[in-house]
Structures are given as structure tokens and as C-alpha cells.
Length: 319
Image (cartoon, rainbow, N blue to C red; front, side, top):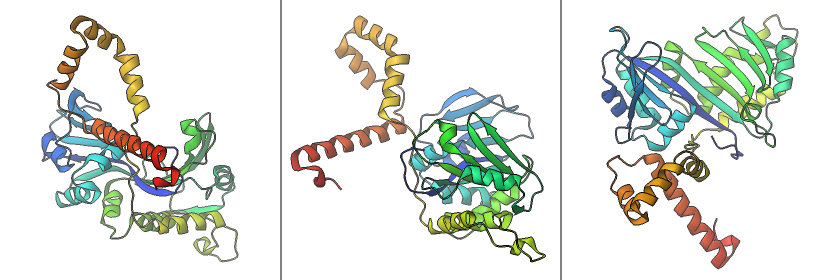
């Protein structure tokens, strides 16, 4: 996620599911990522091996009853959005049609415009100015900022609100995240909602949590909502067209990796074989090209072209 994004968005930020009837290769194909260069490495949580690509893991070779476990972290979701041939609708349809179990699905609202104030939400939580279907709540203040959690870690629906800017060490921008963490049937039901992601997020959120102003009605669910909670719901509902923020990979990270981590090996090869032969070896390398670098190269060429147009015709030449 690029910290420079100014508009508020709703996005999928974690997906993990299991299958006892598919091979790792079949699930990679179901993700629409069979064209990517997967590597084999050590598994986790009882799985002996996993196939890995850009924050997406497919764990396998566990006990006979464990099947295969697919996990997309936040950055893995961005990789999926950028490179998948099937997209979210495709993978969700595959999961439902095959009766697979979603162990976790995170849907997040990212506030970059000041809709939410994390300190106010923390104070209102501690003061009991909210209603929820869960009796468990906690607020945490740490070096990574303030976090409010409604629902226990074992809950099928957990709501977490936290200072994403503080977590990332960003000091000059507002970024508060409100996320739904869904499990099992609750996660599958979310994928069945036939509405835009913003409306689905707002509807589920309202069903499980509201921050409220004290009222006289005996039913607290009818008490008026706090203005900021109403603003959140109304803003999320407006996000009707999902726009993927894209993979978090850039030229500077690539350059740091090549220079700082692989620089000595590259320098040795050039001195031994010469620059021309080194370039030939790179161009004819047996490893498949990584699509995330192809995306970065296209973006670089586009930015270079835009800069040339600005210099030749003025700033208004590029919209």
C-alpha cells in the first residue's frame, strides 16, 4: 500500500483458505498465478513445504488430514490484484463452488482524509459508548500507535481499528484503518454479498458495531450513532468501484536490493567475465522472468515518457 494514496478505499487485505482435495499446483492455477516464478521453501504450522511468490504462500505436505493451506498476506493481496488472471470474483467463486474453508478474510477501510480519530475512538471504547455483538474489547497503546479491538481473537467476526500511519512510521499523513477480520462461514458469506465492496463492508460493520450517543430508548441499538461512525459508514458506502492499490514494489527498493545485497557478487562477475558477457548471461538466464519486475519496468518507462513530455511541452502536457 502506497502511503501517498490520498483517497479513502476499501480493500481485501488478507485471505487464507484450505483445501483437502486439490494439489498446490491446482490452487496456484485457481489463483490465476501459474505464470509466476514460484520457489519451494520450508512450510509452517505443521506443513513441511510451501510454494512461495511475493507474499503468497501455498503450504503442503502436512498431516494427511491437513490438506493444502493458501495464505495471502496484505502485500500478497496486492500481488494477486496486480498479476492474477482471475481476480477476486474468480477465486471467491472457486472457493464457494468447491466448498473450501476460508480460515481468514480481512476487509479494510483505509481513512486518509480524517474521518476517524483513533484517540477519540479509544476513549469512547473505554467509556463504553458503543454497542457490539461481542462482549470482548480492548484498547492498546504502544510504540506503534493506538489499537482498538472489538471481538476476541477466536471470534468469527473481529473488528480492529488502529493508527496505520504510526504502525508504518509515517509522521506527516493521516492513515487510520478499520478492518473486519472474518473467519469460516462469516468469511464465505461476505463473498456471497452481491453488492460493491464498500456497501458490503458498511453493512456488515453496522451489524456488529456502532459507536453511540446516550439516548433514552431501552434498546441501545436504536440510540443515535456518533457522527464519526455515521461518516465512516456513509463514506464507505460511496466506494462502489473497487480499485486495487497495486503491488508495493518500487525502483528504489529494487536498486537497494541489487546494490546492497547482490552488489559484491555482481561486481565479481563483471570483473571475471566482463560487462558484455555478464549482460549476456543475465539476458539468457534460465530462471523465468518475475512479473512484478515487468510491472515495475513498464511503470518506469511510462514515468520517463511523461517526464520527457513535460520538458518538451510544459507541465500541462501530461494529465
